[in-house]
Image (cartoon, rainbow, N blue to C red; front, side):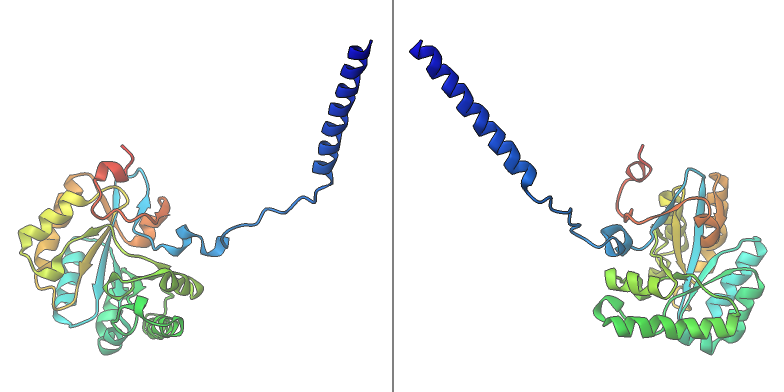
Amino acid sequence: MFIRRKFVLIALALILTITGALWGMQSQKEEPVIELYDLTVAADSQMPMFYVKTDRKAAALTFDISWGKEVPNKVLDVLKEHNQKATFFLSGPWSNNYKDVVRRIVEDGHEIASHGQDHVNLSQESKESIRQNIQTAHDILVNITRTTPKFFRPPNGDYDKTVVLTARELGYETVIWAVDSKDWMNPGVTAIVTEVSKYTFPGAIILFHASDSARETHEALPMVLQNLKTAGYEIMPLGQLLALGKPARDDPRGRPISEILGE
């Protein structure tokens, strides 16, 4: 009888202990979930666009211009001969100095984009300097072309999150590239053609230069276009390529094409 009563008391004690614990848990104030980052500056939004995610065999042809008049006109002649449209990233000072070439780019049906004002590494500048650089070039391009550029390629392809977010505040998508023709090195026509033909993939943004320092670009361009089209690629301006998919913000440079395409 004593043993049975002892067991009953133990059982009651356990029940009271469990009930008290549960009551304590329920009475605790529920803390809200705190986000560890601001969605407006999440890692993905801090990155520029390198290529476009698309299954279509298409690539964007882009040119940077910041110096000279001879090569730009030669490049435009080649594009006209091949009925090819492209995107031109123009610097503000160059555009002011060569308004006639800028107008020809527009008249030939190419897409205008911004290459900024002063040719400096913007990641080393203050936010206000970055804003002024982009805005000054923007005002010049709008005044000459009567169009509103929406793509921005920072000088030297140099960027950080402040550059990307400041450009976005001014209405620009920051664009780097996936394939570098390396024409700026003047490595020889064959080397330029090989570089672009070998590394272009669906959705790639291809970088060329149409400044006078890139002396071989206009010579390599016809074979580049022929090789890519023979391989089944549609070559187009950046805006047209972006309409085929979503901006890809992971840097593909130096990675195997199979990895980029998820094969």
